[in-house]
Length: 250
Image (tube, rainbow, N blue to C red):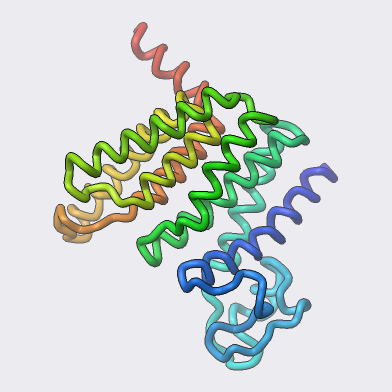
């Protein structure tokens, strides 16, 4: 129980830093300097007003200085990251494997919220992520270097082919993102990632067309669906495969 409480706290604290990345990376600002400040009035936020989740509740979702609302994204990211860490460490145990997957989870969370708001996936995340994924697979993660390299090339190559055939139907950020995911998870999981991501994207796209009146050419960011597919593949890949094989036999 104590381990889970500590994991939650660490996840929430890191989630607070992820919010800094989500806000500053698309604006090409430093994620280190200046210190945290209100995006409306620019007033620096003291540490006692920057406690993950708790400060948002105590301040009733408003900046102390200007009384402007604090975006709901801040506590949401902290909560998702905290609970994500708990689940990852409960599945893979305490160790370097879980720590590496937690890093991947946090990275995908940053990508998701940046892509949703700005419709971009920064190279500053995915390019270093590819190298880190290959390194992690070579040292602590189950896939191993060869499987990781195949995952990177398979995911990135497949999406690049789609981009060429569709003449821009697939963004460069998505290509690099799936390559990074393949580096961390290996070729089998990258296939599952693509399947789940495409399925979720299709469902949401159909929903938007039917209930929101969006046209077929409405651009839906694909990064969040790839991130979802990667998390599903990481945590439930074997269960999904077993379920699919059971359907085939029935």
